[in-house]
Length: 283
Image 1 (cartoon, one colour):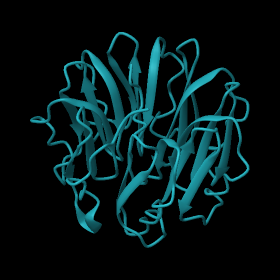
Image 2 (cartoon, one colour; image 1 turned 90 degrees about the vertical axis):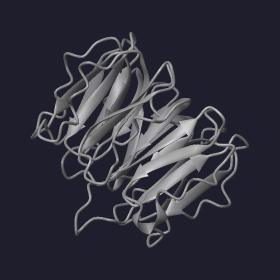
Image 3 (cartoon, rainbow, N blue to C red; image 1 turned 180 degrees about the vertical axis):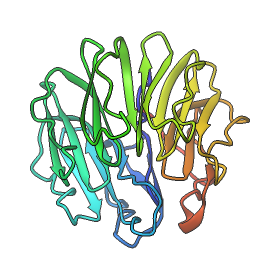
């Protein structure tokens, strides 16, 4: 399973890609410095802070995990979400609105940033193997395939206690999706946008959740999408040879097997200007 994407990340107004040589590319909104990644090296995983599109949202941050287990961060730091310089022994990272999570080698989780809804209450988590951040909630997968969640649960986006045999999870604004080891997708949370309509997906190997849409990749390299399509962010039906996807607030990225990247959706701020990218690779 490819599980959650590690070479691509899509945020509120920007996109990030990790090259095979460990360097990082970024395009899109730069008001908070979230695209200042040109000096990053030895990066094995990237994450972008995402939040639903609204008049009072926009600033974001970018996180990079280095091969030595240290973490880099740039961009908006109003709630201390970029205060990761002291982290060590990290094996995965996730970024949400105003916060960052890090998965340690021992299965525990560290967090910095906004915790007004309890989305950073993850220090009691154990045997964790995967992470994802939504707007106001955080989700994880345990080594036994069960799920964890913390934070805002007003739309039951944290109602994952019955999930089993998971390989990955992804959190959106008000919904959560999970990928099972047999290639099926499950979902919980707000159903008004259609982002939870994944019950008929099969042979899925990777998925991601945008603010109000969900995207996936099948074993044959086809891309799937459901949910809000107001900006064309779900127009992925003709994508082929895809190995990973990333969903932002209103745009979607797809990584092809040849290292190039395709995009669809809202291109304001140039967040979809990834056509010239090459050499983007999964670790």
